[in-house]
Length: 185
Image (cartoon, rainbow, N blue to C red; front, top):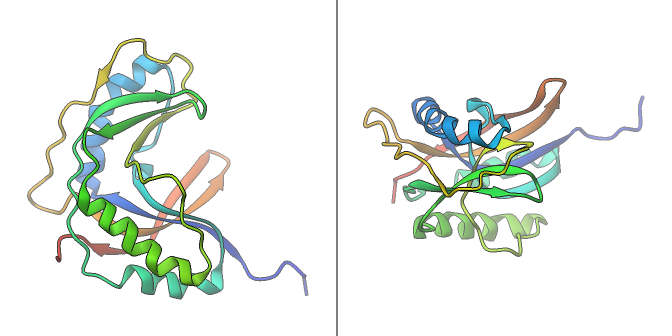
C-alpha cells in the first residue's frame, strides 16, 4: 500500500457561465485577445472566481458541496466592459465597471461557511474578472473595451459552481463538480 494518502483536489467556488453565455463571452473577447497576442482561454474554462480554496483533501468534498447548497443565492449581474492587461501574470482580463453588491454578498456568505472548515479568506477585496487570455506577449497600448454581451433569456447566464482545476498535457481544465442556481433571493 502506498503512503500517498487521500487524493487531493484543487478547488474553487466560481460563477460559471451557461454554455450560450460562455460562447458569447469568448466571441466578444476574441478581437482583444488577437491584439494582445496571447493564448485565448478556452471557452470551456471561462469563469469568475469567488473563493479559491487550493489543494483540498477529497474527504472534504461533501462538506464543500453542503456550503454551496446553503442557498438561495442572489442573482449576480456582471457587465464586463473594460479590458486590462495584468503584466505580472501576463493575462488579459475583462472587468465590470461596478462590483455588484450581490457578488460581494455571495463571496461573504461563502467565506463565512468556509472559514470554520479551516480555509483562509483572501485578504484582498473581491475583484470580479474574467481571464480571457494568458501568456500575453503584446500588451495592448490602447484602452480596449469588450462589446456588450446580452444574457440569453432562455437560461440564466451564471450559476454558482464548485470547480475542480486539473493539469493536462494540453493545459489546465476546469470542471464543475456541483452547481446551484442564482436568483432565488
